[in-house]
Amino acid sequence: MRDNTTAKEQMLKKIRKALLEKRENPYPNLEDSSLYKKNVDELEVLFAEQLTAVSGNFIFCEDGIDFIENMLQLADKFKWRKIYCWEPELQEFLSKYEFPFYQTDKDFEQAEVGITMCEALIARNGSVMVTNEGAAGRRLSIFPHHHIVIARTSQLVLDLKDAFQLLKNKYGNQIPSMISNITGPSRTADIEKTLVLGAHGPKELFVFLIDDFS
Image (cartoon, rainbow, N blue to C red; front, side, top):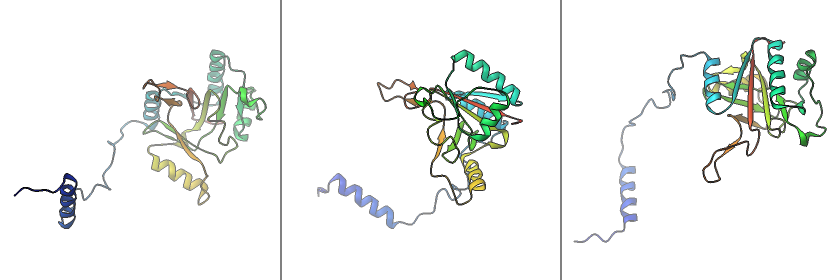
């Protein structure tokens, strides 16, 4: 006798049958298993490798003098003139070494560089976690063509869950309304599948990891 049931009915019949059959979980320890191989590298090395792989730039500095020397070289290379920094701690840090910057948003539409701090550096995928909690707000890491992040070694963690733990420790129940992970420069491949950097934000990302931030 010919079976007149449609392909859809046959599929639904198989699904109902599967739901009625009780089977043991083939992966009982799936939630406890690690998604990644155990990391054997130092976090600084892993972060640098992952950031570089997504077209970011990593610079390790021993102290403030080392940072300023690198900044002067970059400013000369890219001919930067409109450098903006809005976070008081960073302003004090840059002023100590007499590095010029804009403290307000005057002529911000001409901004070439935005210097910000961050919440964490995530070594596993080379990402920078930022929020809107600081004085840099939402604009300074997005609008200028070049974004410079200054981080302490204590902010370097292995995984995303470790970064969220830093946020919890810092803010408690008052978590910032905007949390974003920056993984390399802005990019898109929407047009003819051709990768373009800087399409929706900064086209250059520099991450300075400073051992002695003073």
